[in-house]
Amino acid sequence: MRKKSKIVFLVLGVVACGAAFTLWKWQNSPACDKAQLAINEANFFILTRMLPFTGELRSVQISGEDNQYHTKMIFSRCGMLESRVSTRESDFGGGMASSSKIKLSRNSEDDGKGWVQEITIVIDSDKKESTLTTNRYFHTDELGRIAWSEEYKTGKGKPNDITTWRYRYDDQHRLVREYDVDSPQKVFTDFSYNENGRLNRVASTAYVRQSRWDRKGRWLSDEAEYGNAKLILENVCSAWDNIGNCTLADIITKIRSADGEYVEKGQRLQRKYQYEYQ
Image 1 (cartoon, rainbow, N blue to C red):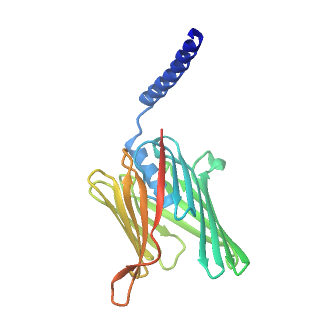
Image 2 (image 1 turned 120 degrees about the vertical axis):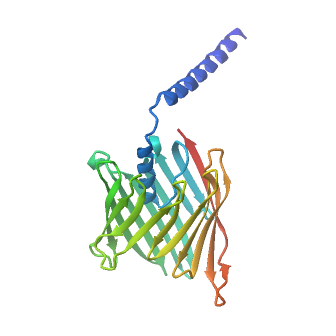
Image 3 (image 1 turned 30 degrees about the horizontal axis):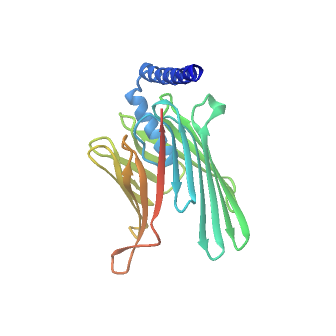
């Protein structure tokens, strides 16, 4: 009995020491600089088109849409996105289906500066398969902000298709404009923020997206309008964790009818979010 007691106390001691060390390391880690946090948030949005999360994250996993969508993201300190892997399966009916995969990682060939992203889309139509691959390289300036990116598309009908994007920031390192350098149509996207510094409007030639937040700084919903408001895509959060991050969101598609009213199209889909904090 004494031997068993000693083993139990030893295990408890090891666990306590481990917890104490983790707490000591967290308390003695240098605080994240406000400017660096803003830069990391802007970079995260450019890389994922997702609104930044709250808190010191280690990883985020997203799943849903009838188990057809999965994403995992890894972070280092201060919200720096290290990697992302996303997969999606879609069945459009009529013998047509598609699968896509997004792989994003830090650029190991340039001392970890910038990111490399590969998107592979496979379309299966009447048992005929075609593949489109997009490689995008994100380059940073001396402050670590994404300054420009190059996108290369390969596949049927896409020989040497290259697009270059540049990014502008305000004096608080918030993204305010993204524009296509080579486009004769001056394609660009503008970003606006509310009085609390939260991104609340994204406007481009293709769509306009409005985001809503509550007084606690929790994200509530997005509403994106496409094709002169003929199609609306809504993301609505219905549950949050104790940090304030959304854990469950509904995806709602609406189309404008002939009488101008919006009606839901198809079934509502859900996404679940799981967070691991530093």
